[in-house]
Length: 159
Image (cartoon, rainbow, N blue to C red; front, top):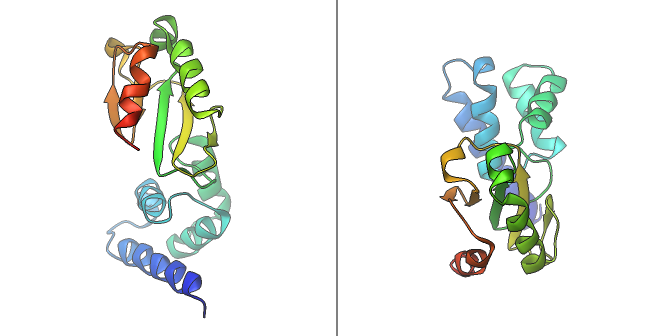
């Protein structure tokens, strides 16, 4: 067995241990998906099928949840994830300018990952931080009331 296969099996073992500790396996699908994405970095079909099997739920249900919620991804992501809120308040207060700055900085569009695998850029519909609009989130840390000229300095902290 190759080193890569051993690592993947260790990740599946960690996920299965997490599932085994849950009191209500079927009712905790979203928690399991979060844990799986934390472990694997994304939710490829193979992971979704193992979750469906382990929780004894239809694979279509797992796939439906993964594709419905924007915080789940089926593609590998960069080491750092940069999200820009494009909800109404953020959009009106300059989210498009932030996205344009990020597009220039990374040379990628929302939904893409830089060639070096360091950053993934995403645009989200609303993050619920309207009072801080426009908002950018890097690895879960919220930066509010941003101006495009602040983006480069913030990202320098993640290099």
